[in-house]
Amino acid sequence: MSSEAERAGALRRVDSALIKRELKKLTPEEFVNHYIIDRVPWIFSSRRQYVEWKISLARDLDVDPFSVVVVGSGCVGVSLSPHKDFSHFHNGSDIDVAIVSSRHFDECWRWLRSLTPSESLALTRLEKDMFKWHHKNLIFDGTIATDRILSKIPFGMQWTVALANASLVNPTKGREVKARIYRDFESLRYYQIKCVRDLRINLTIPEDGASSGALKVKTADIPVPAKEEKRDGV
Image 1 (cartoon, rainbow, N blue to C red):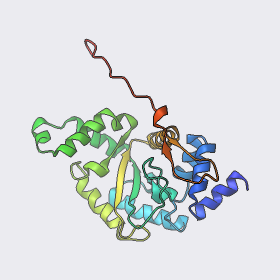
Image 2: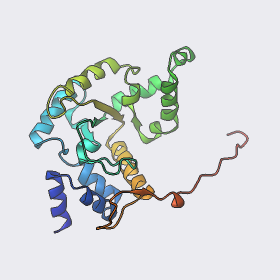
Image 3: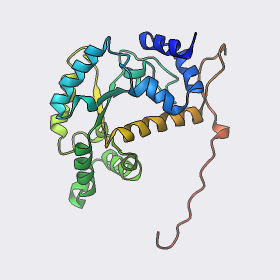
C-alpha cells in the first residue's frame, strides 16, 4: 500500500502503528501538513460538520472561522505527547483548539507586558510560573497558552463562555474545550513542527513487529545542558 493510501486510511480510522511509521518516514513539516494542519480532525465525521462547528465557535470568540484549527489528539486520533505512548483519543480527552489571531495575541501580549507589581501579588504561584513561562518561551514562539491563564486575560470571560458553549454540541459535547492563541499561521505551523521534531528526537519508535509497542525515552542520547555562566552586562 502506498504512503498516500495509508494516510487516507488513517483519516477513517486511528492506527497508532501507522502514525509511528509516518513519524519515522515523513519530515516533521510533512507530518504536520498531513496529520494536523490540513485535514478534517479525527473527531469530526465530515468536513461540513467541522466547518459548521468552527463557524459557531468563531462567532462566539469574535474571530474568523478559518482561524479556528482543532489540534491535539482530537485531530490526530492519538496523543503525540512523549509521555502518553500514543494513547488513543478517549472519553476523558480534551479538545485542543488553536486560534490564529494577531489581534488577540497582541492584546494578550500588551497585558502580560504591562502587568503591575500589585496585580502580580494577586496571582497564585501557579499563575506566576505561567507568566514567567510565557515571557521565557511561548511568546517567542508566537503563542499564548490561554488555556492556562484564561480567567486573567482581558477577553477571558467572553472566551470562557464561548469554549463552554462548544462543549455543549456534538461532536465535542461533554468535553473540555481549550484554546491557545497563535500570532499567525506561521507561528502555529512552527509550534506544531517543533513539537513533532522534539517527539522524534526524544523518543525511540520500535521497529514493526517489536513485542513491546511502547516508546522509550533515549535518556542516554539526551545531553544535559551545562549551566550558563553569568556575564557582565547580560
